[in-house]
Amino acid sequence: MTPNDGCSRRRRVALVLATIWLSGCATDTFDVARLGACPPVVEYSREFQAQAAEELTLLPEESAIAVMLSDYAVMREQARVCE
Image (tube, rainbow, N blue to C red):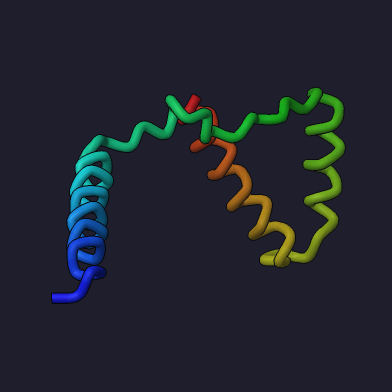
């Protein structure tokens, strides 16, 4: 038996215990609202919304921007629910 065997064994025991303790922390539920992970929802004035709607009508149908704006509307609603 070499003098390092005891030290190495203690190190392994410490690593096993640390792993057990850290994995015990991972059993808690994940609460998104508690962490402040909900993005803020920017409020737009009625005038600005009217201007955006007007500009949207000028785009070709099924344009990439129109599709992206539709996705953005869904994300805004999800952010409102998250708060």
